[in-house]
Amino acid sequence: MSTIPEIRALPVPDGLEGERVDAAIARMFGFSRTKAAELAAAGKVQLDGAEAGKSDRVSGGAWLEVEMPAPPAPVRIVAEPVEGMEIVHDDEDIVVVVKPVGVAAHPSPGWTGPTVIGGLAAAGYRISTSGAAERQGIVHRLDVGTSGLMVVAKSERAYTLLKQQFRERTVDKRYHTLVQGHPDPMSGTIDAPIGRHPNHDYKWAVTAEGKPSVTHYDLIEAFRAASLLDVKLETGRTHQIRVHMSAHRHPCVGDLTYGADPTLAKRLKLTRQWLHAVRLGFEHPADGRWVEFASEYPEDLRRALETVRAESS
Image (cartoon, rainbow, N blue to C red; front, side, top):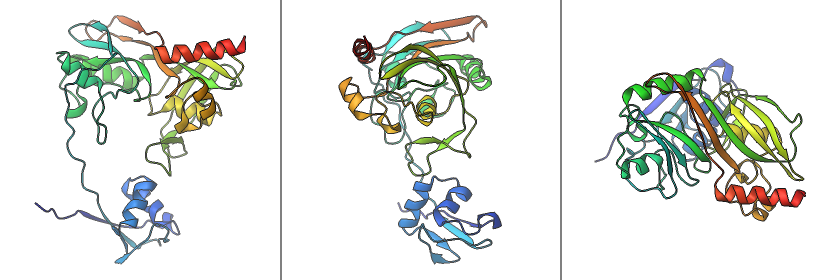
């Protein structure tokens, strides 16, 4: 059955006078610059009734019309065993897992690989029904390419109370990361807002329009070509550690998306960023007692660390 496309039209604010069409669309309709450019290239943008290209300039008061993209198809949770996913704690309210690399926290459009939610479902775990249908029970996430500790809510009470703790920033989230070079100072805080990358939908960046983002780091061990850091997140933005370390000119080793040296990654036999969630602490939703969980490095990260240590001796 065909559907009538949704058309939205807004007058261009005077403050956007002279901006490019793709920039104006991004600001006015909430799309990324990349998506706005795609809509213009597909002939889905009009400026005062005439088709507009992405680089055309807008005038204050002109009407910008955009044919909105169709909503994504619903995402289903597929119960599928996840190789290597370790259960480190399980009770009536929560389950704490060590997520392997290459596994997403929950299903999303375009992702067909394994998920934490699917793995728990395959193992017979009952989880909270709170949250969006495809991410029920998920109170925080790790990147597909990042391994380590995650807590998933099993009860509705746990979901509400854990979400509150993450929102109020009382959860202790600790990561270890191997970064290129030697940060100066060796311990410090990176306070820089993070938002969508202006040119790449799949990336994030330090940008004035981003959300407040704070990362604390301390040196654990320095090597000839890299430094092992303990990182504590005050906020929890997507790709936060990766973006902040890259902006600080010390990208996570192996993180080719954010500017890491591919030669070093190849030498260390790394196919992902050297980043692992090593510790997770929070108030248990059942009785408020503080609980902490720890995770050792997986084999690929341990092997890479041993190599840089040996090269520095």
